[in-house]
Image 1 (spheres, one colour):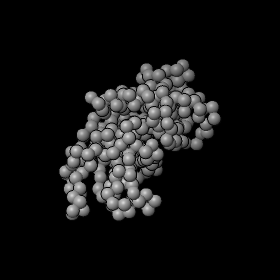
Image 2 (cartoon, helix red, strand yellow):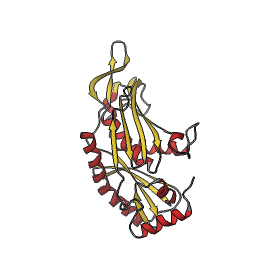
Image 3 (tube, rainbow, N blue to C red):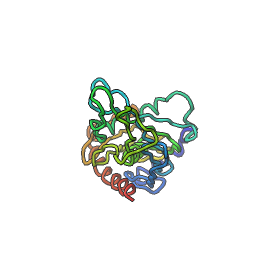
Image 4 (cartoon, one colour):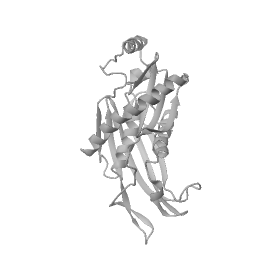
Length: 266
């Protein structure tokens, strides 16, 4: 069910005054909670709650053949399931356009930042490499699944360990893990999604705010570096608006990554 127009009008009016329904500022995220190790079968897993939005992310690994254009690197595969239990807007069946887009945006954020050191996941060049599967499940959808999924993917990867591999038998010992973590860079890449409503840019929208959004841009960034960008919807943005988004993304990343790392450290 779409947001009623009377609610949409109030959202626009509040934003024109620099306010939001829940008292947040335009560039402020909702309360963030992260729980790791939620699956004892996965190599790494995390549950992320961002306000009323909740996702579970799992990391699984096995051994396969490398892609033709990366013979000495591991493979990364990201998939998303927008479960009907998370929203009446989602239906069971083949992956929807929304779920495919979400998976691709998170894949690009991780891949283009070079966060996973894929070259260290090569077992035998041209023959055997580790496959990393990142599976994202929406449990409750109340806006901004994109950023919640990005946080969940990073949290799951940070806690993921490599399964034991029997080199003599050339097989994975599923259910057994060594002491070696999945090789990652030290920075924390995140997706930061901006939504434009009546000339105002906000982050971490509720579902009602997301319904009113005219367009969105997701920036994949870390340490002041922009590694990926994806624009959604059809409304155009000016050069000045893009410059504003890019300037905001660095500060927002600093605040958000600090929260994520603090939670994971504790």
